[in-house]
Image (cartoon, rainbow, N blue to C red; front, top):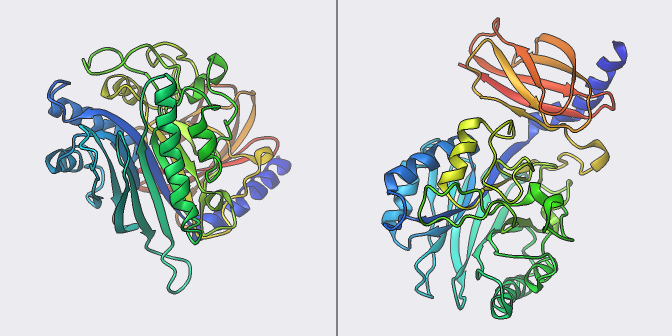
Length: 412
């Protein structure tokens, strides 16, 4: 047993230091499917569905596509679907092309400030550029600016559409090339890419990094876990069907954000096509034995849009977690947080069955409980919390190789 106590200490020594000095920014990209279009499902129904999804996702930065081009729609999403945080604010949108849908960005104003908005004019739709900053900064005068491109590239196959997407990507690369001082930037959106060999994607890779390093292909069942279009079950007349078989929705980051030594960096293994556990290839999103999200979230993802949201996290504070694939974080999913019953339940999403060791700590530094359990894929880890009063607790996990995971559990 002493061996595993040592492993826990090794796995979590860096993590406890990280929690003390770092913050997390949750970034979500979502094509909302013709938001506020009267020909689709009623807006009140749409908002109720999105409210459930955003209550689960809790974004600090949210970029969306297919927003109706008016302030009534912009404020409707803010006031009716993004109610999980009263500090969420809307930015602006561009529509120089007079499109029937536009991009938008919403942000958590406690963590982030908004410095402005500009546009790269397109032939089909504008590409919006938002300048945010992280308020806490790591040095006097350093506001940690972050530039975000929101894009919805031309849809459909065919040479003319491929060329249109390529030209839009080139316009982003050109904009950055003219501003070499900008090193922290992200592009997210519905890129409508059918292949990683498309010129648009290859052009973007000149300036951006794919956080999951899936740059050599997405077609076929072997890439099922990265597909984002289409999970739809046919309840919205505007939705495209056909099942999950395309990776259309992306978040790409600058090389600087991929460096763990930077004051803001990508949190390793945090990039997910939300709700997709890889078992829905070429079909409606399958929610049976899908423990990647709560069941109610999964079923709502099927009828809220014909795209899945994409989520990742950024870490702040500098010297964040090392991007080491041999020591990647353990992949477990919490079922319900805040914890409602007498135990917290996590599902193991690791492929290999093995022993996992855990410790539950209170905020005042007391270890409340510990244990170990042999788990395989999709099996439950139950953490007793009946003796825990209301508060925030930290759960540490470690496997036999010393890989760790840290989870914050809330109990009201």
